[in-house]
Image (cartoon, rainbow, N blue to C red; front, top):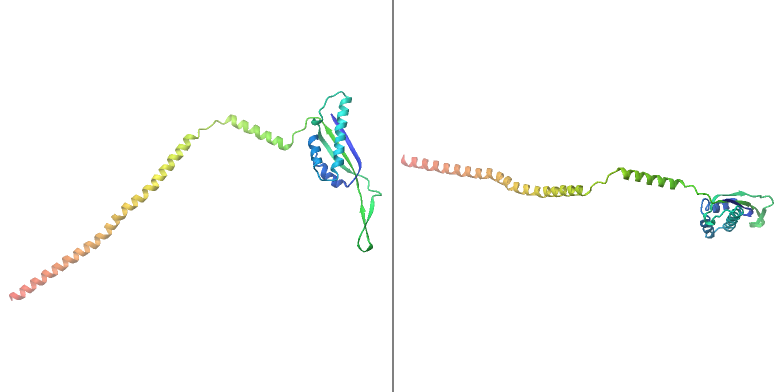
Length: 215
């Protein structure tokens, strides 16, 4: 069921009225009335009256055709604002130093079309449904994998890495004394060689002193 309501020669510019009517386009009737109720704009009340008239027209038309409809099932199919006449709507506003500014007042026409047909899905809803279908298809094909063995393998690898890291300092500590011993052996050999050389020199001096005494 469809119905149309119009409000003509509403005082106010169409540009300001479009800001309000754009808020209810495509919305459910009850939600649209709630939005208009809490909108702090001068054009909100006339638009709400026009919307209520469209709802009443739809219910009356359904009764005439002997069709039962629920007013809560209606939604705003189309709504727009047209520019009204501006002739004879010029006004003068006082200005400083005795001057006057000219103002142009405006009229506008409001048209609201409501229907009880099934509301088409938006692009956002279609994308969400496509994503859900894709996930469902992928979930049916893919098999669940066991995560526990992988976790155990990772834990074993971590333990081995820790053991290797702990063992390496021990090997270095053992190797240090050996290096020290290798460094100390040349010094000991040199001191022993000096002692032997000193002994040989002492023996030679003793022998030469004995020979001189015999002579």
